[in-house]
Length: 285
Image (cartoon, rainbow, N blue to C red; front, side):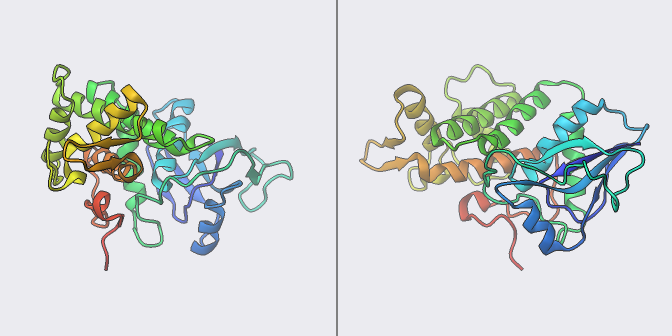
């Protein structure tokens, strides 16, 4: 069995994965949350145990699992440093890194899957469902999912935050994903396949909605076009209304996250599917 450190992830339960599992180092929620949320350091919080029965290549498993854990907590997570056979979790070697220091760890907006303290097996189920797609056979839909998934995390993984780059990553991820789902690469207006996919997933959107611009896909398209073609961070409508990119970045980010979660058929009952509109990631009460 191979045991590798997980740094910067909030975990207090054992997760059973495909031929592997994640084992937390701590059980106290307050301590784990404090260590995992440190913006200046990646603290060792868990270990990945990989058995001989694991069907995945080690490098690919680590690469994709890092992405999934980062997506969950919306902070960069690192999986590195193999434990020696004579070491135990209670007695780590003096030279085994308890922390990894690097660039500033930016917060991507708060966790998107309920924590172990409240969500029972939510994170375990989400990890398995995500890995099942990320490590599965290549299909146009899975390729688009991977691209959009990694665009989501690259938004906060970067060393600095650039609103124009973030918006473009998120929008391109949403567009490419929806075109693949609809098998529509010919529509000149990308709002058409995006709207069809979102409506099919149950989101309250229209292709054009002048009365509710946040629910209008064309609002996001106009902002993307203004950014891409003119380098502008706002759009002035024909009626004089001004739409600022900074106001629509967060809704777009959460909407893309929810679309990807819908695709893997995950719903633990805690998610608030309207969080892209009201900013509340989980249901109240």
